[in-house]
Image (cartoon, rainbow, N blue to C red; front, side, top):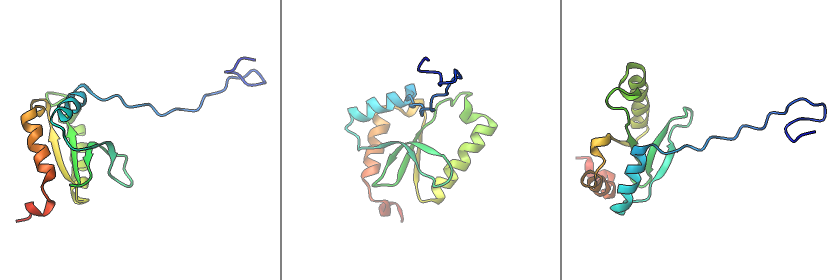
Length: 130
């Protein structure tokens, strides 16, 4: 019998392997720019909610900051009714859990803006409570 069939000749299903997520072109751009400015270590695809399967593109643990790269700003999922509503729910929950959220679109992915974010991540959270 072949490796894909059982002893009785029936086909076996191979166990599902989790798909490895491929970063978007915007995430790859962010990664290159972040490395170029020697940005802090970030956790990718961070699952921040204990029940929902929500993930943030990047997470800076020391400052409890989630960074989201928003694709499709000109007519994609993030700007259509249902997708926009889902994103708002996700960001509300993250905020209520004490996370800071930075949302970036294509035009914000440059060294000037990312340097400002890098500097922001170094500031103590208490510095903003005035």
